[in-house]
Amino acid sequence: MLNKYFALIRMKWVEMFEYRAESVIWILGALTQPLVTLAVWLGVSDGGEIQGFSPNHFILYFACLIFVERMTTAWDVWDLDREIRQGTFSFPLLRPLHPIHWGIAENIVYKVFFLSILLPIWIVAAFFIEPLRLALSPLEWVAFLIAVLFGLAIRFLMGWCVGLLGFWVSRVVAIYSVVEGISLFFSGRIAPLSIMPPTIQKIGEILPFSYILYFPVEILMGGVTLERLVTGMIGQVVWIGILYGVFHFLWKAGLKAYSAAGG
Amino acid sequence: MSISVVSLSKQYKVHERQSGLKGAWKSLFDRKYRIVQAVNDITFQIEPGEIVGFLGPNGAGKTTTIKMLAGLLYPSGGEIQVGGYVPYKQEHDFKRMISLVMGQKSQLIWDIPPMETFLVNQAVYEIEESQFRKTLAELTELLNLEPLLGKPTRQLSLGERMKCELAASLLHRPKILFLDEPTIGLDVNMQENVRRFIQDYNRQYNTTVLLTSHYMADVTALCNRVMIINRGTLLYDGDLSLLSESLVPYKYIELQLEGSVDLPSFSQWGEVVETGGGKLKLKVPRNQVAEMSSKILQEWKVSDLTIQDPPMEEVIGLAFKEEKDAE
Image 1 (cartoon, helix red, strand yellow):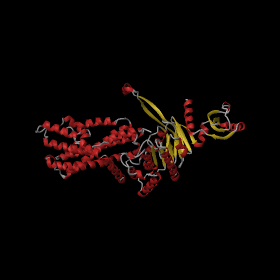
Image 2 (cartoon, rainbow over the protein chains, first blue to last red):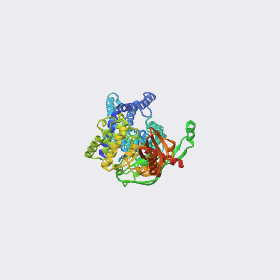
Image 3 (cartoon, rainbow over the protein chains, first blue to last red):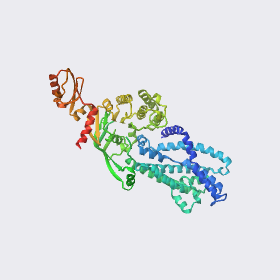
Image 4 (cartoon, helix red, strand yellow):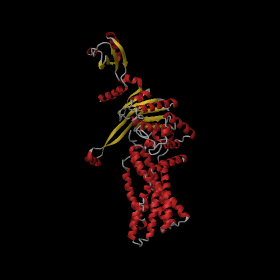
């Protein structure tokens, strides 16, 4: 298995360098929405605090958000949508390796690439922007790392679950954009969940979205309680379990429905 | 490795769309479905090392059958065994034993050189380094791949890509090879190359090959046995040489006559199809060919006489036409 991953990662790396310009644009493009949202909040707070969030808090929050968002982003649904609809999904399916491993390998490559760009930017930025200087304990760093990986797993599996619906319907990207729209509110992308109305917070705790972004961001901002750490991770593990189950079911049923389109 | 298919069927449920904006709007609320019987109760057996040609017009069910054999499609009914495995169970050992080449689709990764796909296949199919090097060297030699390996796939011509496609599919030395229109879109020269390669490969490794094609030349060059399918039903399964005998009730007698030709008097012998320059082609019922030829030779001064089976295209064309007429 290690050999297979090595080969897939190597290939994806070569492929990524074919698209190097796009890859960089991908990172920069993802900055716009959080930065605009940050500007709005800074404008609204007007130098004061909003429910305990100072301007510095907002800056740190959205910087963390950008970082976690990029590290957990998943685009498999677009690939699956295209490949299933056009029938090219047949090729990974013909090979003696589950197609999901291609997706995992691709994620590893792009995430390492994103990290290698975002980390230096953060370090340089921290010299100039005081709130970006992080002071986490080793335990918090480890917890953050695990939380990001779990968040990535949730988002990746969600993408695959929606993508596999392509076995039955022909434009799953549309379905996914609805999911993304909902996640805008509950993942913490528009505002920290803690300053959202209590109902939204309550729903957010149940839905998977906050476990993708908000929870890892909370840890990275520092000062999270042990209790929150434990409940958050339990939430993440539960969602990974649920989504894996759904994925497994959709996969089995989908293969029977697959029509391997095209001659 | 043998292939055994019993009463295989496949139905698709197709959403019928009406044309136009109004139709599209209507079909949002009132979806009509139609059941398409792509493959209907076909049964056959292929022995190890055989090359079998699978013929039929577009939409006959060839590709659907091949996809079921390769495990991509789930059959609606019947039984399939390929090399002792049930394809749709998607077992890895099964996948390591087969390969599917589709002339219209590419397994090569589009934006990077074919060599990258080969390396991925080496790992995924667990091919040992020494065997990989050996097979790759062989394929490179046979298919003349050397100049192509480093070019991005998207820059390859259709023929070049097909050669790399074949190589990528054969690296793991499959025992069973499914070729779905491997020569489609290729020029005559390249078609010939691909054919020769497939033939050599089959002889060398005793690979079982099932091939579909629109080009009769592919089939006549490669296969002793053909299966003809139309509308999902198997019309013929047997020797290529016996095909015309069983499907076409006539032969052609071609004559080179000395002196002038009196055409009308020939119609008593059979249907005159072609004339010119003292040449004449007669369409004669199969069972009367011997009798007719001897009579013609007695009554006319003939410098040359040949008896021919109708060309394959005609045989197949007729087979499909007759079936249509019978409806």
